[in-house]
Image (cartoon, rainbow, N blue to C red; front, side, top):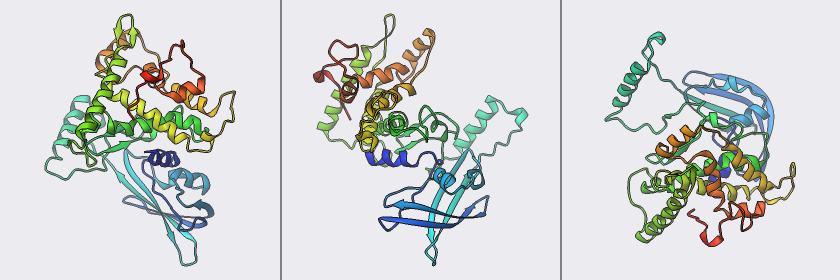
Length: 355
């Protein structure tokens, strides 16, 4: 999990799909002469004559291509509803490299004039589109979310997580921010989606996305016991007047929130900044990590909306998505010196930890 989140944070800022260039030597300078753009709709060549220094295990994304090679990303590909972009390094006989950017574009063609487009006929078209898939191989490359959408998701039947470009912006991600800010925000979201594979629902699917019990009886019983503690905890949270959260309804998301912050923090502590104590604006790296996490969930709702959320939404209200996990997370206590008597204090013996 940690390797995945560190690798993901190393690549985001590019496109929906980036691949890695891993040099064979431990450290090497790649002299890039050309960028070749190929795909089902475009073939383009650019002469750049630039150099990139890579070490073993380094990755290169389209964002880095744009930044370090001064290549206009808009010339590489136009943002489509669905697309896949891969980058490969091809070594030439003279020791230089060509970068091959393979662009595969996916288009949905709606056979409906724009002036006739409505919820009804669009829904009818979409229904027919889905029905047409019956009896055909499953397309595991298809996205059900558009590129600019500010969201993310875990898909148990595919065992995959999906992060569209829309969420890769502040306050979730900032290419120029320090590690604490990014790991506390987008890092937590990545950890959250990973943990969905091990929550009360995702844990029922195996690695291939099949509904299959892969747990031992003892492990499953321990997991259910801890999961019930999460339900009881969130049932105790009062949202409005006498309105309590529904711990059972929100259990999967609450487990993912708890696991997400733990995974993100462990990954953050693997970075140089995570192992440092240098303050920025008076806050330590750990404090900035938790402040970024809280900032990503800032929101304001009318009481009527909150009542609806509590009764219908499998996600806890935003503030409880911060308070619930952190009151059970010991590094938060250390970072802000939380003591008995403080509102968020929970004794170590009562803290809940699943992942």
